[in-house]
Length: 338
Image (cartoon, rainbow, N blue to C red; front, side, top):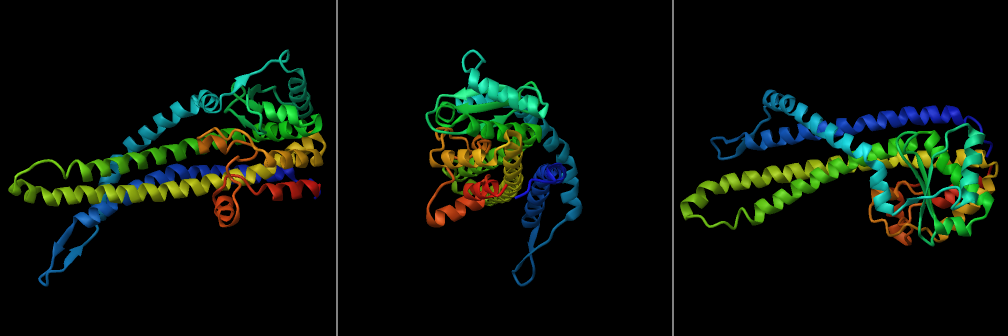
């Protein structure tokens, strides 16, 4: 496949990614409105003369409470996002066990990174290493002070220089295209939604088990039964809204990640000047992907190959459907067509 139009495709992908990232706060605020609307709808019921319950939505009331809630939601998400955004380097290192290396410790890797950076006129990122005999690599960071390329000891020892150049070129392309910044942004928003969903489910669980087990007189129990059921209904509605929001944010994140892996492969092939070397490296990595001990799937999406998305049969179908990475065999086939 002839390698043309890369910069046009990068601009196109960046525009699409910006649009997708804008969906995250829209989804969060949209779910807040839906939650308020459902609570209002199910809380405004009355019985007609035939004994049938009639419900209606008071849109004016919903909009009033929504506008009152928006500043608090935006402020909470902004503070949460800022803390996670600027502590991402420590978060990634803690999750993977990575440590920095110097030119003296590993001159071969340091020189490969330096030569590729000179070739594409970019500043030298930090280089980290993970003590793992298996093979994997990833790029991370949000700016020139935190951009980092991380390699396992296995990939350093088991790939030749051309294959390492292809892998490192792939990761440098992620940095050049600002993929790491965008992916970390998506990771944070997904984390916010999933955490809120977990809190709502936990509150629902506590209200159901502990709220219903307290000792009350029969009169008190009768008076509070309706309130208890209403509270549980509110929590159920909240949990469903969070689940829908989480699904949308996951699908949005996947759309970002898959497109950018193909672009990073193309950029890495161009940078190292040997597409077949990168294809060979991907084939070797897919046979023994490392960093399997990293339990956080949001961090694993940064890896050049996700270590957990290989599964046989029907499981492979669902794995590929919800994976943040495209199929490795397809990536190799495209590189071999260059």
